[in-house]
Length: 293
Image (cartoon, rainbow, N blue to C red; front, side):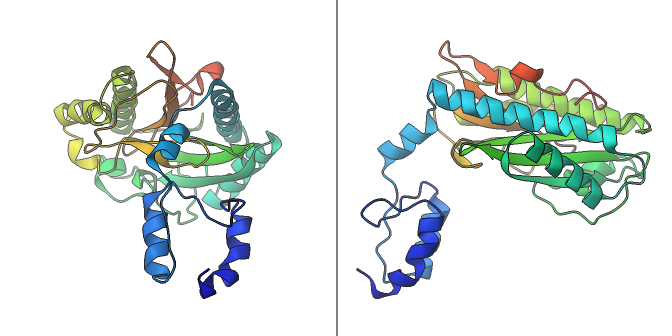
């Protein structure tokens, strides 16, 4: 055994990646590459393709856990605005949603909470305001009357993860019409991607459909990230929905469906009949408007 391994063994045990033979199994390529770079004297072996494919396709039991986790996360997000007000800080709103996730019985809950400035035309998309950042960080700004509040939340239930995002307005908010229009464009793009997804379709086609729609609307250049990712025992896992993916969607596959700019995200799975079904369908699924997340 590599002499430098002993100091890291305890850390890997804590991450629950060790097998009975003291080996780690990683499904994410960037982790394998990082370990190989950091420890060139160690032998790092990626999880076999067959194992990754088993991870990608969820059983009925796994899907039930994912549904529960995602439904509870969405309900926590919907609960939070009831305790918010114009002028609240991002940090205070973050604490509210974190408490709601914990009260729902979810573990390891975290929620990127951002308030987006809409004081300039189309600023949500054309300026690097908080809510337009796909993996941004907040400034602890106060919520203005013309701001969207964005909640990008993840949490786990028995090891299976949720990933739900909403850009929403409070009852007292006065969102400019141009920004409501952008919200509606993103909402439509999310729906188009969902309608495109079914068993047998190539992943890049699901990614391309909303890009075409947003391109016709004049917003394609702002869609700078992939459409979605697999989800299960990790928040981000194979297969991915991006323009270069040749993966074929199959029953049991689970994906996030993420919009651009104002950010709307719901996860879905491919059912036995080949159609896509939202993991949040049991509690109403995607948002219906800025005021109804």
